[in-house]
Length: 69
Length: 141
Image (cartoon, rainbow over all chains, first blue to last red; front, side):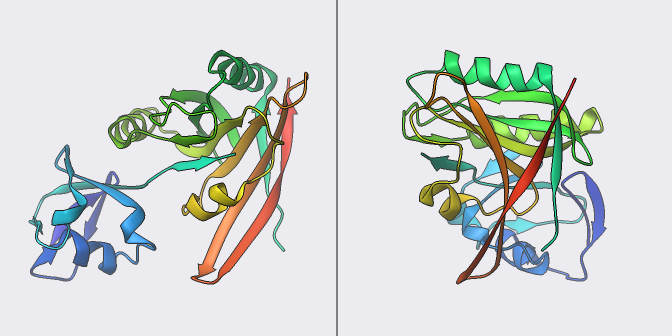
């Protein structure tokens, strides 16, 4: 499946993917700390396991960023 | 252990300090865009926690800045935040929450009259292993 991930085209050797399985396929560490945008829309974390990813989709991954003194 | 350096112009360093002071009493934060280890752009971000002790980026603003930086062929090479009342070192909360190994984490401390700044990399090779490396900050004119 051809996807655009963080601005770069990638081929993922899977026929079906969800956000969760894509994060796993991309070896994203601590996926529970990652925010995901799918075709310009933020994806709620509680649907990562069910939200399907399709051929041609554009995704952005980024880590939650926070801290404190 | 690998050594890391980070070049930041005097002007951008002053922008960070001014931004940190303007946000008092709260912590402030932002991204630093650039190439390799040279900062070219400061992207101030909203601290959605609006707290003197914590900061969090707004994910929607993060996505917007990521795309803006990409359009300028920049990488987001640094994440800055301020410590209004404590030194420019990583707190326990920082270490727990800094999960991205790629950026240099810049901390501006306003604890003393003269602001101070330090940079760090945080690596988590496994669930129970954390490596913190101090980054050499080069202030360019």
